[in-house]
Length: 390
Image (cartoon, rainbow, N blue to C red; front, side):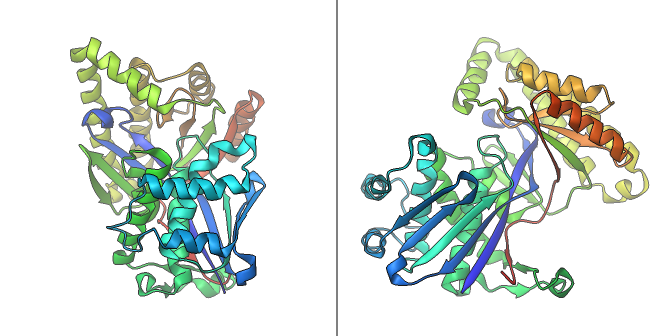
């Protein structure tokens, strides 16, 4: 028996950093996915985790997982990912696998895997294979996408009522490989468990990343309150990875310190960023205007992107590599902004519908010649789903 789940990444469209201080932000799902495939195996095979993109395979005897199952909770409301006893037990299991020094940074992800696996699937032997379109550590929600796809696949493997799925009507037209929809109630459960995994990886996550990856489309957040917006987004973007690592915690702290020194000025910037967020949400939800006045709507979004980048630059979270990308795309009359914490990471560029393919290829080549990595992607796509016919 095999199952496969796919979960999208996420993109912050507006409101980075302002959201930390109680202002609104908006995030959307990103058409780049993490795929989790689970195949049942024999007891002698134990549990195997294959991380294809990292060229890493980890394996545990079944009795090790059985000992873990005895101390975790299968009820999501009782599950405690911060239990020192449980985490130490999992660390002992990972230690026996001797993670290579170069891969030590993924240890928290492996801990989250073992916690979620033992809590949901228990001591059932299987091989779990993970692959992704998403770059790690680039602010695109790769860890949440990992947790969401893993949880959905784990529940599918248990064949529990928690994933009462129905075949998508289009499956036959997709050469026998179609999406399997997951009920709303079950998505809530997937989201809760994925948040537990995110807690292990990030400590105190906001919940935005896993919510966007689970439910898809658009999420608006303010003062910790998440509002799901069900509309898809009629935009295409170009994502450019600066390949510059950054320390999100340090960047957030730096903005906080600037807020302490210049409260009135920073408050004014955050209020401007919230106004950008509110206007952007309003524009994206105006479906009728997109049908009749698409170029005008795209132009408004591009202007807001440009203004937002100026705000982010003013609060100290831009970076020379980000500025270089913005300058490069501006040569082609395209507008760009950083997405996420800044200080490196990724930059999004709006691709207008009328932009020719040759021009787009020139933009990408220009950026790639400067050492950057480009991805084309849709935004506001559907959330996690199972794939039929694996």
